[in-house]
Amino acid sequence: MKKLDWYIIKKFLGTFFFTLALILLIVVIFDISEKIDDFLEHEVSLGAIIFEYYFNFIPYFGNLFSPLFIFISVIFFTSKMANDTEIIAILNSGMSFKRLLKPFMISAVILGILSFILGNFIIPPSNSERINFENKYLKNKLYSRAKNIHMQINAGQYIYMESFNSTRNIGYKFTLENFKDGKLQAKLKSDYIQYDSLSHKWTIYKYEIRKFQTAGEIITTGTKIDTSLNLSPDDFTKRKSLVESMNIFELNDYIAEEELKGSEQIVYHKIEKHKRIAFPFASIILTLIAVSIASHKTRGGIGLHLGMGILIAFTYILFMQISTTFATNSNLSPALAVWIPNLCYVVLAGILLYKAPK
Image: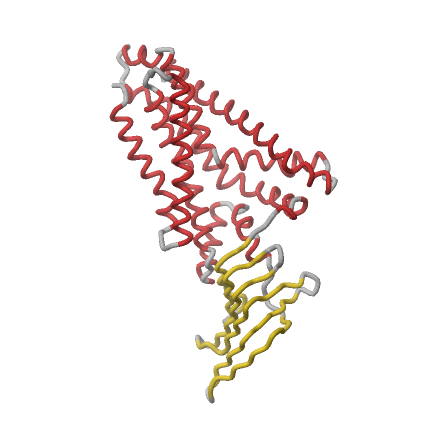
C-alpha cells in the first residue's frame, strides 16, 4: 500500500475511535445522572458499578451504534480533506476516485469484522452480567409487556396469552390446551391469570373449562381457581435479555427450539439474529455513502456535510425501525425487514458513487 493509503487509514480509524470515545463519555455521564438515585438507594459499590455495569455497558452501546459512528467519522475527516483541497490534489495527481476508496474500504472492513466478532461472540457473555446487574439494582425501573405469547409448557400442553404485564404479574386472555395423541382433550379459557411469587402458583380468574369426551362435551365455569403450571413470568419477560446474552450459535439453536414450540416471539429472535449480521455490512455501505458525499468541496463546508450525514444516519435508523415494526406486526420476513435498509442504501451509495468526482 502507498503512504497515502496508510495516511487515510490512520485518519479513518483515529477519527472513529476519538468520536466513539467522546460520544460514549457523554452517554455514560447522562446514564449516571439518570441512575445515580438507584445506585445510592441500593448502596451499590463503586467497583460493581464500574466493572459489572459500565465495563459491559460501554462495548454493548458502542457496538450497537458503531455503523453510525463510522458514518459520522468518515463524513467529518473526508469533508475536512476536501475543504483543505487534499481530495482535489489526490485526484489531480492521477489517482482515480475508485482507487481513493481502497483505504476507506479496508478500514470499513476491519471495523465491520471487529463489530461482527464483538456482537456475536464477545458482547453476549458480557450482556449477561450487565442484565443481571440491571435486574438486581435497577429492576424497579424496568417494565415489559410481552405480547402474543404462545408456547408449549409440557408434552401435549400449550398455553396462549394475549399479553403479560410484568409489573403486576398478570396475563390477559389466557388459554390452556391439553392434547393427547394429537387430539384436543381439554381447553381452558380465562379473562386473566395472576402469578403469586410467594407460593409460585397461578390464580385463574373468570374461567371456562371445556372437556371433549366420546359421550360429549363437558363445560365448567368459575370465577377463581388456583393451579400450578410449568411456567413462570421469567419464561417470557426475560426472553429478550436471554437472547442478548447468546452467541450466534446458541441463538440459532434457541430459534430452532422456539420454532418447534410455535413461539410467537420467534420473530423478535430472528430480527436479533439478522441484525447481528446486517450491521457489520452497514459499516461498509455507510462508508461508501459518506465518502461520496464528503469528497465534494462545497460552500457550506464541513457543517453542511455533517448536517447531511446526521440526516442520512437518522433516516437509516428510522428506516430500520419501520421495517422491523412491519416484521413484528405483519407477515414481512424478519430477514427482509432487517436487510431492506441496507439494500436501499446500497442503491443510494451506487448513485452517489456515480456522481462522485472522477
